[in-house]
Image 1 (cartoon, rainbow, N blue to C red):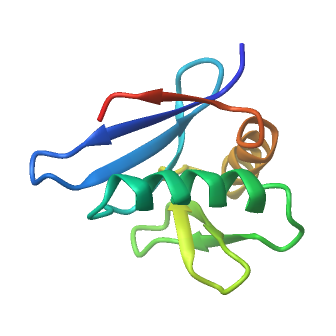
Image 2 (cartoon, rainbow, N blue to C red):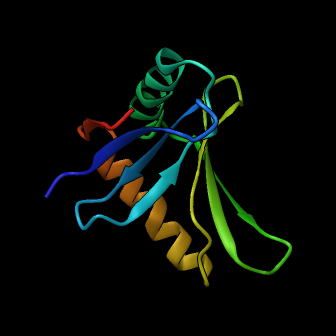
Length: 110
């Protein structure tokens, strides 16, 4: 099963998207966007940047958990993962985003 981008509207009127793997697990989340078109541009940025070498940065949170961010070519963070118990799990999450993002379908719930 292919990945899916889920675009939603938050209670404050802003827009947000998640990239879900084929199994339904959320593997990347966006920031909040004021405009729907901006969120759609964010999705396209994830699609185009996910396969790019050097686009991902793995980090360690203050609680010792691991996560990663996806950055655009200008260095801006365009998505962040959930927290993982191990660096290896975070690396597997990166690979899942690389695999799912380019061809993920859009589910527009906004």
